[in-house]
Image 1: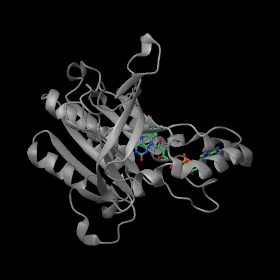
Image 2 (image 1 turned 30 degrees about the horizontal axis):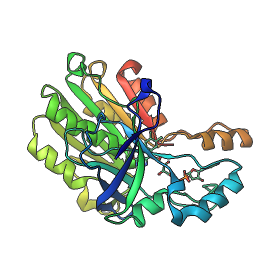
Image 3 (image 1 turned 90 degrees about the horizontal axis):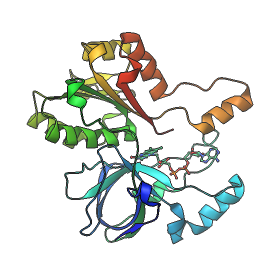
Length: 295
Ligand SMILES: Cc1cc2nc3c(=O)[nH]c(=O)nc-3n(C[C@H](O)[C@H](O)[C@H](O)COP(=O)(O)OP(=O)(O)OC[C@H]3O[C@@H](n4cnc5c(N)ncnc54)[C@H](O)[C@@H]3O)c2cc1C
């Protein structure tokens, strides 16, 4: 069921009552929620996100009220990118559970643990969507023939949607998918990416970079050790001025900025900031880098 909640000028944003058709466990802390939306036509673009309001979950009532009391403000809806592509039958989002780390994170996470660990088939949810600037321009193929995806953790979610859409609708584009995770078992969409690469050997190359993997057997030409850094980007992007980069992952959050300001320090760069600096250094123009920060 879709209900218009906005003025006619922004009719794309709708409240949608959906049913969880399936829960796919991707990794120990990440699940894909496949959402059944009835017969409504879904008007979204690859790379868009929807939002989920934590207030709709009775199981979170006390926790939400307590966090709102501590923070002195209402808990906002959380954004989740679609991993599905618009031409696919179901809508799907993939959620990575945040953790509370004493002395590092200020509060325990509210919504992601419930979505990952306590969501079951048949559950009903209200989602609001669809929006976001992290999309391909319709004329992308006239600007480049090489899309470079650079992602970390759940940053792969919108990029998978963009990749599937582009493989289906922009046959002239080839893709390099550079994906950073801590370990091999943390890699979300591992099989899906391998299948897509096998189906499109001339159009897609997937390179993993693992920062904390201890099993030497997983490493090889397409599974590298360490962070996504300048030498790796230089090797995988032969013509930096001509490609388009879609960069998604953890970035400096407003909480990090506040904490740094209180400590009289500069916030430490995260994945987005470090990769951005390397991309600029190897010569990718800013105008050819799209980024989405999950900070
Ligand atoms: C455009 C966009 C798309 C996204 N897509 C995805 C996706 O596809 N998959 C995915 O898993 N995630 C995605 N995210 C992240 C997601 O929206 C949530 O931020 C994430 O799930 C955490 O939500 P939570 O309720 O579990 O944690 P939260 O309760 O939001 O807490 C997260 C962190 O923020 C800190 N924090 C919260 N409030 C405060 C405060 N007032 N002061 C200081 N620190 C605070 C907490 O201490 C904690 O460390 C996306 C984010 C954006 C912006």
